[in-house]
Amino acid sequence: MKTTSWLSQISFKQQIWLLTTVVGMFAVISFGVLSNSPSELEKTANFNINMSIQDIAPKLEVTGKALARELDLQLDAPKKKSLSSMGITEETLQHSVEHLLSHRDSMLKYYVYIALFAWGLVFLVRLGRPDGSDIKNRHDWYPRTPYIISLLLSVAIAGFLLGKSPNPMESIVKVFKSMIGLYPDPMVKIVAFVFFIILAIVGNKIICGWACPFGALQELIYSMPILRKIKEKKLPFVLTNTIRACLFITTFLFLFGIIGGRKGFVIYHYVNPFNLFNLDFETLSLLLTVIITLLVSLVFYRPFCQLICPFGLISWIAEKFSIFRVKIDKEKCTQCGACIKACPLKAAEDRVKGKKMPADCFSCARCLNVCPVDAIRYTFFLKKNIK
Ligand code: SF4
Ligand code: SF4
Image (cartoon, rainbow, N blue to C red):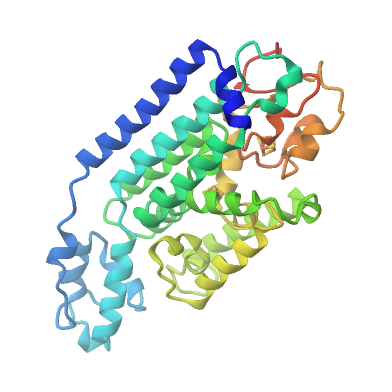
């Protein structure tokens, strides 16, 4: 088996790296488990429609505007009047409370993201290619099994076990929402966003490629060895990025009431596939987004990331500053096209051609074991020549 062959080829130093990384991952997650004190919120949450927004919102750790929006009221609805006098039913209140509670961040999940990110980074930079291995053994490099294990862990732990929040997509949306006063402490949302963006910059989008649970689910489906002929077709980057950027701008315009005339409307809310991890499909559009995305993932690489995700867009911009990334040695490259064929996107092609605005690279490693002249590495951005 290829993974066995790779394991037998890695050097003693790499074995130490492997051991240290795995132990480090366990240590980080264990620390997260020990420092994650369960919130008392659910236990104390006992709300009814005789209470006002002012009574309930602080207990849910949101602002009055956020609760009003959730109850389908205007953001400036009276905060001291009872909910029943504003026509809110018990059912609507319970539904809104459940939804707001489902968006609270699991702090443990941040530790899981760090562990999966660290594993991806070490594997790509230090482990995937056995030290001193000859180029003719390249097909044994970067075996898929360690990647698939990381993806499965992401879906199981950062997805279904710990629920939808936090996730990279939501981190951006929450910063937007805090701009119109939907969260009591905007700085907390900014810190969460900065956390994800720093990870995206340190290792080129490794947070998307290796740790994001919905990204992982799409990657696993795409990796199934079926419909290979159709998979050779790649969506044009100009088209996917334009759609993603237009959606981003439109969301902004709706959120601030520039379109629609009502502040607080968030388009992403209706296409947020992370709801899958809470099995919470409050609108038909959410269910359809998940079903369609997962079906399309059979033939196109990460359709949600390419076409919709705001973090996909922002981290594509951040890629220009990434510290560790795929690098192609232009002096060695013969433009044979091997990496272009292996890449599920236009990312490798744009890099070979030296495009100024290349397509997103999800650090999937598919291009790292195909180059016949050893011109590709996942390495430090300033490294000049690949030896
Ligand atoms: S682009 Fe994809 S992988 Fe990255 S945050 Fe969005 S859904 Fe997750
Ligand atoms: S195959 Fe494409 S997406 Fe994957 S690491 Fe290489 S350039 Fe990036």
